[in-house]
Length: 130
Image (cartoon, rainbow, N blue to C red; front, side, top):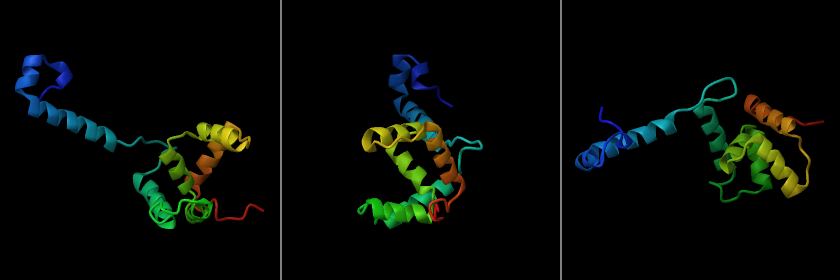
């Protein structure tokens, strides 16, 4: 296997540029394909299924409104996590956004619990609260 570009001098880099580009792209690709594992992580296929539910209900995100999003979350509670992930926020950041944008006080531990429940129970939003 060729060395990485940061391991060589300028002369080697210039004479082996194509091979070093291949090494770099292999490194980048493998990093994107590695998924973290553990009790709080889900399989990619599970996440992808929820993403597809959101995509279907919103007409490929053309009708992204309260009604279509709630419908998607009732079909699969994990849609909540998909939306949070698309926005790039953690559960505590989500709670902070609720406070700053909507003036709704959601403690960070409650935001984490909601996130966990949505990951564990696909029917979380389809069950009446009362």
